[in-house]
Each structure stands twice: as C-alpha cells, then as structure tokens.
Amino acid sequence: MRRKVAIIAVSAIISVIALYLYLFQLDQTQSEPSTFSAELDVTMSSALTDDQKISAGFDAIKAQLDQLKKDKENTDVVAMVDGAAIDKEKFVFYKLNAELTHALRGKENVPDDKTLLDNMINDELALQQAIQLGITASEEEVNDEIAYQRSVIENEKPASENEFVLKLMQNRIRITGVTDDEFWTSDCVRNEYKNAILRGKLMTELIQDGTVKDFEDYYAYKNDLVNKFSDRITYNLEL
Image (cartoon, rainbow, N blue to C red):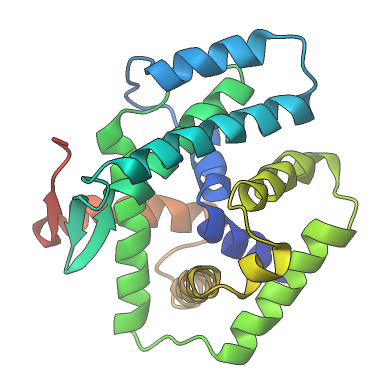
C-alpha cells in the first residue's frame, strides 16, 4: 500500500506520471496533432533506444517551455477553480507531457485541450475537497514520502512495469537544470507531495466510508468532479 501511495504522490509532482495513468485508460475526444507532436513523430520513428526517445522528448519539452517563459503572456490563467488558478505554463507542460506520452506509446493524437484541462481541474477539486474535510498532511509525512520516493528513483532497480514511469521522472528532474538535492528540497516539490498525500488520504477516507469501492472507482469519482462542481470553474482556453 505504501508503494502505491508513493507512486500517487510522485505522479502529482511531475504531472506526467498521473497523466500516463490517465491516458492509459482514456478513450475520449482527441485533438489534431500539434507542431510539437509532429516533431515528436520524427524523433520516435528514428532508430533510437527507448531511453534515448524519452530523453529527446524531454529535451523538446524543455525547449518549448524555455520559449514560453520568454513570452510575456506565460502567466496567463487558463482556468480558475474556486479561487485557485491553473496557469498557462503549468497547462502547457501538462499538454506537452501528454503528447510525449502518446508518442512513446505509438498513439497518433492526444485528448483535446478541454479534456486535459478538466483532468487538472479534477485534481484541484479533489484537493479542495480533502482540505474541506479537514484532512491534513504533516511535515514528517511529506519528508517521509520524499525520502522514500527519492530512494526508489535513485537506488532501486524497477520492475519492468515501473521502469517507463521512473525514466520519465528521472528526465523530468534532469530538464529542471537543478541538482537532485535542490529538486527534492524545493518548495514546489514539497507542496506537490503534500497535495498528493492529501488526495491519497481523501481516497482512503472515501473508500472507508463506502463512497467508492476501490482505487479505480475513486478515479471515476474524481474524474466526474468537474461536472459535479461546474459552477466553481471558470475557463479561459482562448489564449
């Protein structure tokens, strides 16, 4: 159980792992390929190893994000969720990860922007629900989860089913341009771990009170929050 919670936590930090789990079971509206997707198609079709493809894909993501940071509009908000903002840079990173994940899996198109944004909104709504229920995460819990996940990534030889996810995480750290210590101790990472722990505890509480049956049922519950609380959401996708 601890390993599953840790994987949930790290997915929230880098977005891409949660995104991978989400896209793995998603069969919804898809968008037309973007320029970035076309560039990835060239990379993915070349004679590279899987590790090289992941590395090249994250290099392309970094180039896109670096360009976005030069744009004065990079602080625009794409959605407001009951007072909490989802900014353009975070959404673009999430979308680029979706395109990379699809390319690595040999899929042609990614879900459209609205579908991707709704998934981010569902995560925020789940976090808000956890806070409203009085669920908390202590500094010790955050420290323990960070230490555990860092150990998994840096020291363990992953099973084949986890190797892909861990390679994504390693490359996510690499493109930040900071040291491993700086990454793991950053306020951003600590905050994302805390939020992930809160969502994990929400899942546990909902299972215990009978609201949902299991992990899969919780994801179905969470993915419907955007419809249940539509009055709390303001979209601004026309950027």
